[in-house]
Image 1 (cartoon, rainbow, N blue to C red):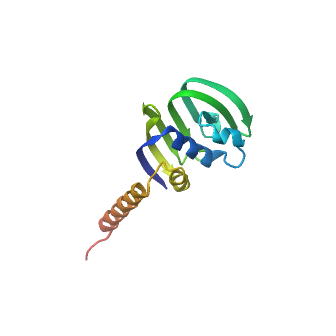
Image 2: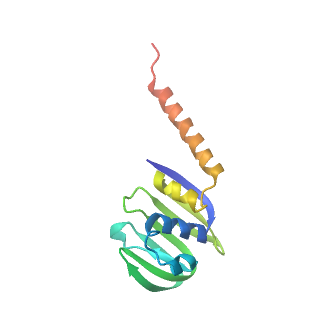
Image 3: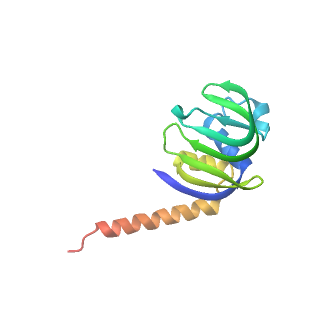
Length: 143
């Protein structure tokens, strides 16, 4: 099951989400603290790609390549399972729009990284309950 995502968020919050979802257990502490360091991953195992004015490869650990990036314009994020497909696009400065589909596990990490607010999630849950009720109403037959 995936959840539709369409929110404005900062680059740092989305960077945190990517780290939580992919490499929190092995990212070097210095990289974790540096807001200009991002994980990237080859497309064959769930793509993470940064479009930036400039980026330098720092290190490769497991299937993640850590890059130092300047002026990030966009990010394509796809989970290994394929259940999460997100795109972040710069709007102004470090603010961007995040759109796509997220698995429930990714939604948890989007909340943890403060990309999604409690209110946004409550609205999603309410919307999903409405859709479920509509489907159940369509499927019930009256005698």
